[in-house]
Image: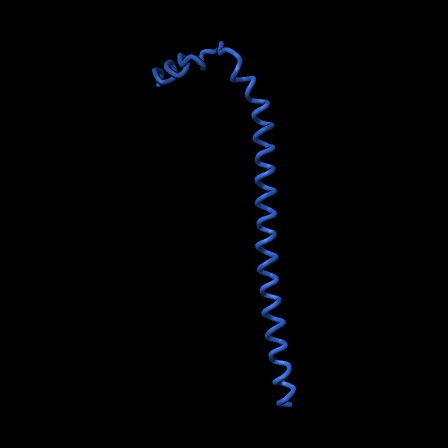
Length: 78
């Protein structure tokens, strides 16, 4: 019994250590993949928003809100 325990104990400890190391490696790799995916999605979203917002900034402003008179009249009424 004592000899069996001496043989099995290092085997169990080594399996646990290898399992923990592999789990840590998997977590680190998955985080890196998720961060890269998030970065790629944010870049795509930014580009698509840029394409839809840029034409609005290129048009000349024809409302009172653009030239500041709306802001001045709103602050004067408070």
